[in-house]
Image 1 (spheres, rainbow, N blue to C red):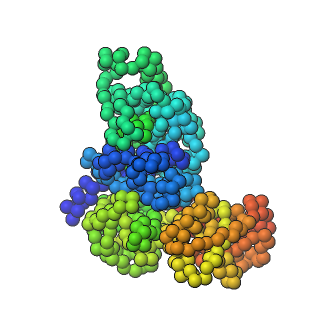
Image 2: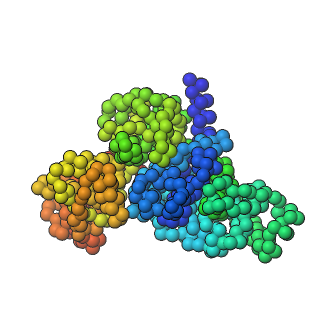
Image 3: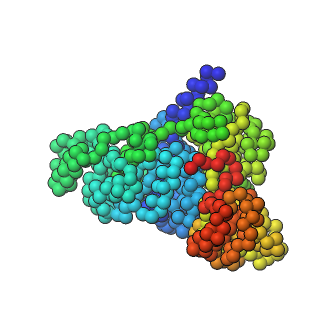
Length: 540
């Protein structure tokens, strides 16, 4: 049907989908708010910093996030700008939630790496960059907080090149920094943009645009700033590599933008350039080979589950990335893992905690579907010929604790809370292989995950819980399952547990302990990531 082909091609061409990655406190939630401000999705931007009279930020909806001023969950924000439809996947900045970020990046076509101008590359940014590299995502860099004292911009470009092995291309360059940050020179249009500060940056910034040789600049800029800019631009033109969109799309070159999300300096310039340079939705690897987004049959995959986004309704939402074809409300699809047929009723367009009903969606879009316990992370849904996309692996946790329910009368709520939080992947939950030990074992990457689970059980399920830490720090999945484990015979100083899919996982006290077991049992093959429970095993 040629009309559908044309409709799909047009929809794909105008869609841009990206995730923001950064170290905590680099200003990610603030940048998200400002992008929404320019997209007309909100009229006044909030900030994460606690100010009593301030609007709550749009993208941090969970009470604990607002109390602490951090992003814990990933949210999806959809808005339009110019002729583009934008899906912004906001990820947790906190390192304890890098697994949630990994899942979100599985649904993204581009990544925006946010860097604090004073601190440069920080540990969490490096860690998340590695995840982007695994997926060959194009990376766009926004150097934030130029309105505060920071490092030399050329030094920051050099750090990205040296430490991440990425070529850099400064699309714009700052004029001054700290209190003297006046604006940026846009190398793309060869124009100077001077900004005026707004109260807390809650409104779009006023931007005066002029040529580099404009005589007014002598009065508007201090001589040292003007001379310094001229000098730096000459250096960049001489030594910096040429702009290469192919290299950007291959994840080998990063376009760099300087600005301040808090004051809105450079945010609109960044957004406009990003929309021109970013990848539109691409084909994805499946059991039927590479599938182009204009493939006429609808397909999608589940990359995230979230319980209780709306506390009044105790809902469970599955986040689905539309990969091909056209999604339509009430359509019936096949569920690849179970073989069942599912009717997709009450689809929602997501905007942080707010939702509105949706009739159609196209490749690159993210939709929310009510999840009555049907979906698991990594599930593929499809119409037409059966296919499955790559699943999303679980990573090795490092902290383990029994979760105790001291109040037997709350058994039902406790059980419901545990199964729903496990389903959404907020934390890995394991069980002792010994049937007499009934308490679930929480397995986390960081301490904050434990706190969030207990906080949510109290607030969302009305269950107080107690943690009993276990003295293990390394988890490994057994290749070959229970049979291979049985053949290996008795293992000392290890605990055998079962994961969500009933597969054996060995817990070790430390790396040395694990190495000893591997040396004593060479036939035992261990993995740091779980075999995916749903979808194709990703090719490494």
